[in-house]
Amino acid sequence: MPSRFNRFVSRVFRSLASMRLGLSLFGLVLLATILGTLVPGLWPAYQRSAVFAGLLLLAVANTAFCTVRQLPGLGRRRFTSARQAFYGWGVWLLHVSIIVIALGGWGSARYGRDAYLELTVGQTAQLPAELAGGEVVSLRLDDFQTDYHADGTVAEWRSLVSLDRPGRPSQSALIRVNHPLAFGAANLLQSSFGSRYRLELTQDGQRQAVSVDTGRPVSWTADGRLAIQLDAASPVNSPPPGAAGEVPLEVVGYTVLVDGQPAGSASARFGQSVRVRSGLSFIVQERQAVSGLALRYDPALPLVWAGFGLLSLALVGLLAGRRPEVAIVPGHPPAATPRSKL
Amino acid sequence: MSAFINAEYGLFAAGLAALFLAMASGLLQAGLPRLRIGRLAFPAGIGASGLFLLSATARSLGAGRLPFASMYEFGLLFILALQAIWLAFELARKPAVYRLVLLPFNFVLAGVMLLFFQESRPLMPALQSAWLFIHVLTAVLAYGLFAVGAVLAVAWLIKPDDDGLWRTMDRLVSLGFPFLSLLIVSGAVWAQYAWGSFWRWDPKETWSLITWLVYLIYLHGARVRRWRPRSCAWFAILGFVAVLFTFFGVNLLLSGLHSYT
Image 1 (cartoon, each protein chain N blue to C red):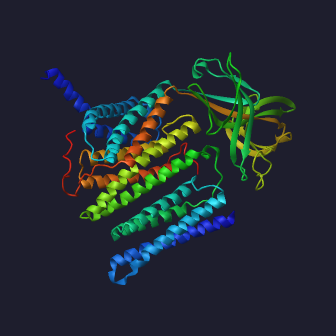
Image 2: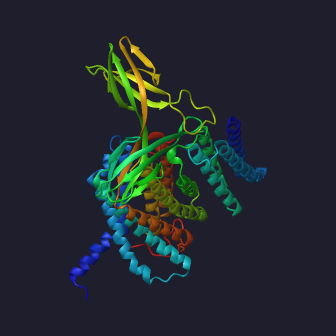
């Protein structure tokens, strides 16, 4: 005979595993997510809040309890056909996969780390050790190329890199968008591109050479009121139709800023002096391509992949299987199965 | 290139006209049974499907790739999926009410998509992936099934004595859910390769999760909690409202990583 304590535990477990609670929790997650995205200024900080995380945690815990509770009944159940068995086990596996994905997602948010590198060709950077599995890894950009479509839009970025680790031969790899370089629990991705320019600024006969990256203003005058910002380099004209591939870049757009506000924009050719106003001129002397590489370390990723695998398997079960017929007649209570007490 | 653009636009517009003919003949037949004009609905609907398919083919030939990238291209595939479901209903000899509710919906959707017509563009680097096809195909299947499910839910709310409408709606929603799940998973896998993270709470991702939650609640409510059929029908409509917001609303109102067009 079960003790009072066991009965209490059983009752608590059934409450936690109840469908009523599950639907309420998922309903709350749904409402919270809708509000979070539609109320201006709330997203994305909102999804990192304790309330939202707590709701998700409770919903996943309920799914876990529900899954455990369903298992004995599913094991004893006699399916009338293989397709019904597929369906029954598919539904159960779907719940398991959601728990595994949620665990992986939590691990990813808790232990995942990001870093961002901007390298010009020939430049070497040391990767943060905590993102490289504790190893000392240096990364060198050997080459970086941009291909263009015939209409002038970017077709592809390619970074040829070398990874050097003590005691191991140098590893050379090509990184493209959608084709990251994986090493250990980290992935190195082609994230963005830009340019680094060598600029000669002249003010009343005084010359100064500066290095400036795309989109980042650089002060021109000593009081800092006047600044210049260079945009992405482009071909002289849009490439003619059929001229896809690598295209020489010869002009760069620039914006003159006064007290941080744009005061005028135009284009400059490389190597030609551009007079902005009396006593002020500049020359864009050289351009180096900058490859933006994102480093993502995620030790929980295998768990997420496992969850996705289970989910896909479960969905195959659902699609190949056959749901037991339930007679739902509009306006009448269903006849085949009693209303769930969960 | 412009010849292909003219051809695809013209074919789409002709498809829209054929769809109007199919819809109008079906509605007139329902209102005036003696006219026998309803016989036009099937060939006109087939003609519309063929013209939309030709328009998609012309676009593919002009762009040198399949039309899977922009909002207009997704809309074109969506309309083709809905026409395929309409054809399946016709071949299964479903009652005229299916035609009466589905064809007007397809017509309105096709009309809206014509407003979003834009020339095809080359694919940006992030879209050059095999995952694009899996992701978009699962989206077309899931959204198509949910759209027809919602249309049938509306029809059942108007005509609640027709059990067949309700059952078909329920089957379509049940079938759409696995495809919606695959849509989210394929997007997450692709995002891991393209952006280095399988989930970023981007507006499109978040709204696909919202849609998934609505249908998840529907399925549990209908299967386990034995909700009243009317509640299920309303939830099927609510789910499709979430689909529409994910498709149109997020693209037009919220900016994020999916802002490609």
